[in-house]
Image (cartoon, rainbow, N blue to C red):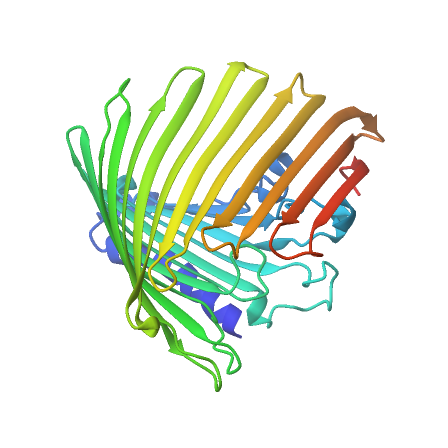
Length: 408
């Protein structure tokens, strides 16, 4: 019942301006209005547009949506067959009003499988914990753009679960400068379960970016957030803190590469520790380099330091990673990724080191019975060392051979 009501609200919001604008359209134009239905599912697959509604004042399109989260585990032996992996399916709608000056978008989606990756029952429509609702409205008026975003997902939804986000933002274009301001709220425990806390965060951001073609882009952003627990079950301590952050970034895009260097300062005040402060400073470099059309190299370097006033400890975390993607043709793909992370504290209580690596070789074979077929060889390595606590080190080396027939 809740899903039917939400779907009705979504369709009504997207079609409401049609009735409001029709009164101002001449009768001769009303006679020319039409509803067009198109079915492109046979051409574009599951994400094709089932139908659209077009009039002189409104254009709305509806489409089915499908999403399967990529495999993120570095332990290949923990992977499940693609047919058993979690998936989500839903319906989305996009509407354009006032000759493109106002755009609305919405989506309602449910998990197609349960937490274990296997169907639990045929009808899962009434399970609110597996549902996601998303709506967005974007408008523009000359140099001014504005919008509102809303998204809420239950704790069993696979993509950003157990989180509600609502945000309102505005952006002004002032020559080469672009000023953007936003405010919003996020909270967890969407279903308000009595055994779990609900942590609510209110944030405000304001930033300015200097953008000019063929020039580096410079941006400066200030953010302020307040975190507090709005619901605490019996025996769980309340949480309350606020933080201020400032980030400066420099980005440049060339013909075959792009790079971004950022430096951020975050100061957090914990009200539950008597106003104790923690200061973190982070520098991050990310880049993408394409020396040839078939090869992409993406390095990432970061260094983060955090100083805690209540303990006097200083925590340092350097990190480096490199990923390579080589696609010789439509048939052959090579991918490799490696990363290193080290975390240490000045009081000697933290000293961990982690090394990860993963490689993939994929080859698209000749079709089997008219269906695309792919074979891939994958290898993964993970090594985690804890130098302060003995006996909890881990090391894993695994490999996987995967044969995928698209129709299966």
